Length: 229
Image (tube, rainbow, N blue to C red; front, top):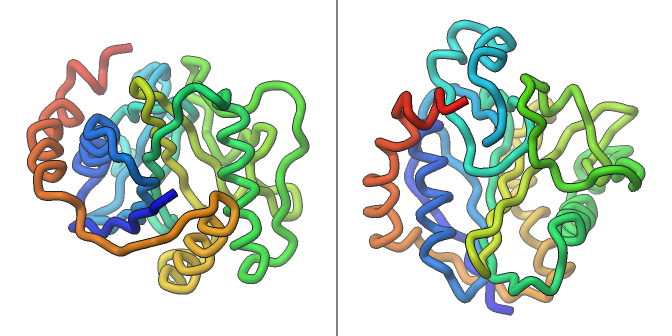
C-alpha cells in the first residue's frame, strides 16, 4: 500500500481533533501517518466520557483547553507527549482489536531501539479502547496491547471507523519524547512501513482537508460537543 507522511501546521487540541476528523472523512486511498505539531498544551478525552468527571480529573489549566476526541479511551494530557494519528482504508476485514494489535506491534518494533524494555501488555480482555463514560486516566489504566515499560503504560491509542476508513489516534508519553521527535518519528514510520508493507511519500496535508478542518474546529470548541455528556 502507498503511504503518506503528512506534514501539517501547529494546532491546539481543537484544531488537531478537527484535522483528524477531516482527514478521515476525506477517505484517502493511502495509509496516512501524521505527527502532531502542537500550539500550546491541552488535553483530550474519550468520546463516551462525562465532562464533569473529566474536569475534576484535570488540572485547571488543562481543563480550560480540553476537548472530546472522536475516538474512545480515557483522559490524555498533551503537554510533552509525541502525538500522532493514522488514517487508512480498512474495509471490515479486521476487527478493531486486530487493527490495534497490528498497529502497536509495528510501532513497538520501532520503539525498541529507543526505549529500552518496551513490550506489549498481555492480551486478553478488551482490546482497542472505546471508553467507559467515567473519567479514567488513559495512561494510568493500561489495556491489553498497549505499549509498556517496567509496568508503566507509555503508548496507547483508540480507533474509530468512518465507513470503510479507520482513524487511529495515539500518544507516546515518554520523557523527552518531543525533544527526540525526529528520531522517534523516523523509527516509528520505518517500523510501520515494514509491518504494513508501506511505501512512504512525504506530503503536506491537502488544502481541501485543512479547509474542512477549519470548518470542523468550531465543533470541537463548542459546548455542545465538549459537554454533550
